[in-house]
Image (tube, rainbow, N blue to C red; front, side, top):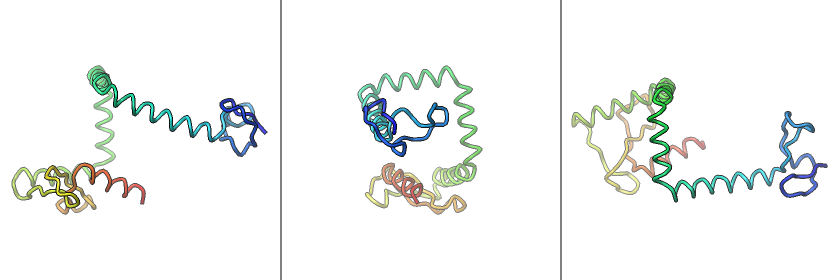
Length: 145
């Protein structure tokens, strides 16, 4: 049995996450308190970002301006990990610019501002046209599968 530092309840060790760095091998807070903290912390920061959008954007802009090497390294890392994705995006964008492919409205809602979604990056000209919202949903479904 162990007492949670957050809620003060005495619970069995199965109600605590393991942590080999701690003396007894378990976190000081119980699982439910850690989960609750995570939910409130995320919603707090989400609300803060929404309420202080200009300040957050200014901070991001200043960080990127002061740390260009960090930003270039991040871009280089992304490009090295996603080469076929970038090739497919470049291929369809080149076809759109040359006029060989016409951007269509979102196939789900009809929004004229659509993105080219590749189901298979090895077939760069086979795309589905989705608005930003439906494109994000498509990738979320693909990640969950």
